[in-house]
Length: 131
Image 1 (cartoon, rainbow, N blue to C red):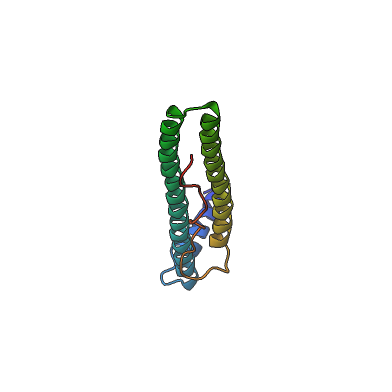
Image 2: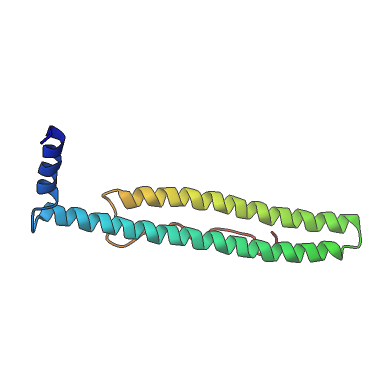
């Protein structure tokens, strides 16, 4: 039997075949709590992203309809500027949400976390009337 195989078996006996091992139970519990936090954080991030995209698509449609009905070039430019402003605000909100997501991941992996999952700043700013 090779030295590598013996080391592998020794590790298995130490980590996985010790019934009632408090260390093993703590490691398993910690692993799955972290997984749960990460899923919770990721869901909140995704929900915020989809909400901003949903608002953006409706705002773009409304802006396009107003641009089609614009009577002057100035009116058209104003509608386009308002649409662009809202789109920029949502892109900035996406960036902030990404920063919050990264911070929440780091927090979930640290030992300083409470037992309850932490939210990743799901309430970010976005312009509801412009895309």
